[in-house]
Amino acid sequence: MKVALKSVLLQLDNGFALSSRMAPAPGGVSHPENLKAASLCWAYHSLITFALGGFGAETDPGARTMPLHRPFTIMIAGIGAVAVVAAALAGANQSRAQTTATGSAWESIAQVLQHPRCLNCHQENVPLQGNQARLHIPLVVRGADNHGVTAMRCENCHNVAAGNNPTSRTPGAPHWQLAPRSMNWAGLSSSELCEALKDTSRNGNRGGELLIEHMGNDALVLWGWDPGEGREPVPVAHEDFMTVLEGWVESGMPCPQ
Ligand code: HEC
Ligand code: HEC
Image (cartoon, protein in one colour):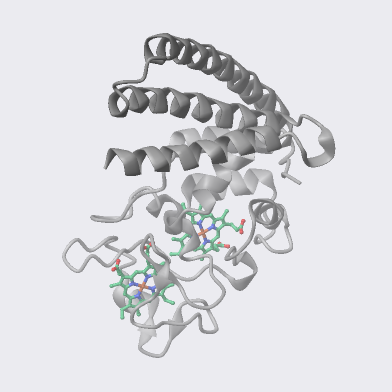
């Protein structure tokens, strides 16, 4: 057992030692991300060296060098760890400074928009269900008015007056329907979604103020925060989401590259 663990540790350590040497390589420049990766690898390397030292002491009780070797290992690992934490913190600060201009606000907005509670309806032709984004069972399709076809009309099952049904667990909210095709966000990257959201030819002709209005008050948006028993709400409080959204609109709706 110990031997197996030790060999796993050794292999891991080889990997980390290797990547900590390799990380700054591409382009030869010490990009902050590379630096951060190298620092982390080094931290793991130090930790594992430390752990291996511990194993050595137990599996090799006769080893003469141990009393001298172990304090050294601990000291080196300690110095390594401190340096690494400092480097990682410096790296983090640097990358935070870089993202404020390009859209850390956008990233928190995208976190909500790309959540299954929103994305499940912003689809091409068929809504999805649950956090796993399964195809809607039974199968329903968009139809001419986004409300489905024949007997499979959304409002036949989704209660638009009374909201979520706690007994059948069918979600419900006023004007329940698939988002129009131009508002299909399926498969979009964060930056593509950003461009789609503010494109007035696709978003129902909404400028920033109207986007704020929609996400502040629309019944289907608000449902994402009150999705009914057994369904996870979107991860950011609505008030905080609105604050970030308003800030993003004020700063001219910047999108990441
Ligand atoms: C039940 C389906 C449904 C759910 C769930 C849903 N939407 Fe929508 N969404 C729609 C429909 C329908 C429209 C079109 C409304 C309109 O144009 O008046 C729309 C339009 C929008 C728009 C404006 C158009 C655009 O593309 O910019 C935004 C923004 C939006 N939804 C955000 C969200 C967010 C955020 C959530 C989750 C918290 C969400 N929606 C959940 C159906 C849904
Ligand atoms: C035959 C009844 C029925 C019809 C018709 C129907 N649904 Fe549903 N729908 C359900 C049930 C039941 C659930 C809940 C499934 C679950 O959570 O396991 C559901 C779940 C959903 C969800 C998942 C919500 C989430 O985030 O988990 C969406 C989105 C949805 N329906 C959209 C639609 C749309 C849009 C239409 C019309 C085009 C529609 N449904 C028509 C019964 C129906």
